[in-house]
Length: 116
Image (cartoon, rainbow, N blue to C red):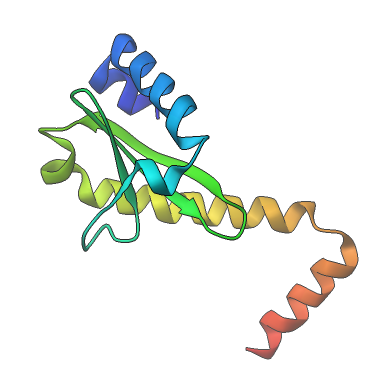
């Protein structure tokens, strides 16, 4: 996200933060619009000249902010980076969830993984 800050600046990031707090906390699927391939099923949220790209983790209703960028640049220049960030976020969050599971849940997960 620090790269996004350098690109958009502090004032724009403040605007994005306000929109995120107001809209995404309330209902991320209602306020955002689904993106088309190759970024489907990610969402975008408009905030003035900015676009906020995010993912909604359905079971837990977690919102992962993947990128904040200028509307003119984000789609043409950043699609690959958005997808990379999604992959990294998925790995990090899965690892975090695995680390916080009780021991008996970890053993069951490992057993299921070995059976595949």
